[in-house]
Image 1 (cartoon, rainbow, N blue to C red):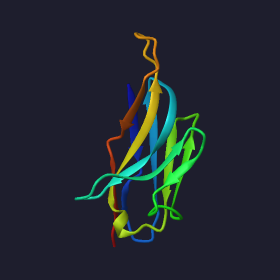
Image 2 (image 1 turned 90 degrees about the vertical axis):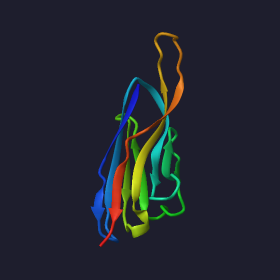
Image 3 (image 1 turned 180 degrees about the horizontal axis):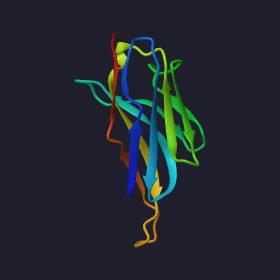
Length: 125
């Protein structure tokens, strides 16, 4: 019903920058929240940053001051601009969204949580 397509990962040197983008598509009625999580090898998945429909943004302590999350409501996209990257930022980054869809069969508007496939970010010299 809903697909999240990520782009922008890659290899970058410490201190460098990367931009991650995520586009939501499908049977979308509205998006309540959209953001990024990451999972490093041997660690649990953690929130990086998320933005809700009203525009409020929540950042992990490790991301504050270095990462900026923006959202284009018209295009159903979010962009994570990452700067001053550190080796500890190395992880698979996943887009996540709380999306309300329209079910024409039941004539209802169910809320669901969706994940992208993940994109690798590697910070290394």
